[in-house]
Length: 339
Image (cartoon, rainbow, N blue to C red; front, side, top):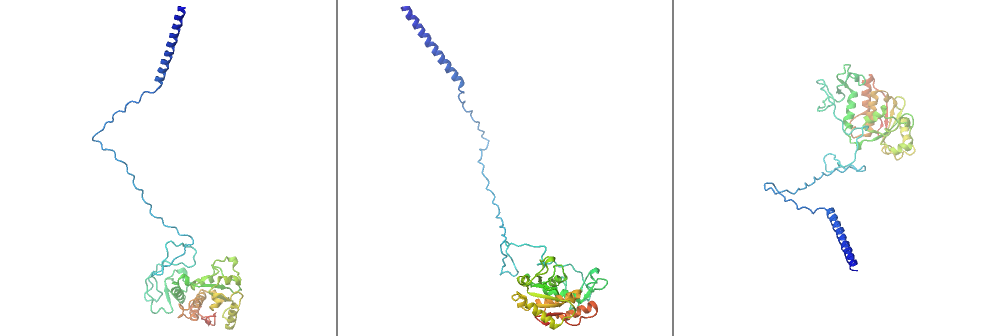
């Protein structure tokens, strides 16, 4: 019995020793798995000669210059009423077009001195001669001498033609765009107008005016009374085939134009600016220049008050052909026979 107790006690002791061994083994494994304790931070060596670090200061951002505000498409052109010259707003919308009929400004052409003692039209920086009443002097290349009636050498042209062309440019070239009037030109065929490359179109421009049909295509030159009424021209020119006009027939034709349907409110009819021209004037440069003078006198009487269009026709045709036109070649409702 006692032996059995001793064996039981030994077994209990062995059991307790095995558990302690396993516990110690587990503790040892856990200790190996844990990372070593953080080493103490190494002391920082301070250099007395070193400058202490400075805080970085952020540079202020540069301000962008204010951008110019783009002009809106519908921004109107503003005129400064207090300015001595016409001044417009910088922000106003505007466009320069290469196909404008009349430029706002043209650079003066370089010119050379004319022959000594010759009367002539003033060039850039020149003065007008006192004896330049009926002639004008201009230097021309030889290829233009024939059409302008110049001397065969082409060096100096003293002609009535050049005088009247210069006069028209001098009197009407400085007109403001808003002061230029619009013209409806009708050929000897009723309701048939002219194309922008025609001699008639150039006559309108030479008289300081605009052509209401300038934007029409060449195949669309036949118009109606409604179209003319909508364009509301300031003057109407009607061409009659043949040579000299019959004054009574020309007056009747002018009355017939004024009585056309839808023309009662047209400015040309209300202001009495209807011009009947002989078709013979369109055949030569001299005649076309005379037509410019007639038309300019109708449109701008204040600028052309001292110019006799009938005398211009006689002088031009006398110079061109050696024989002046006899008879009446223009009729105006503003001035009756001639202008």
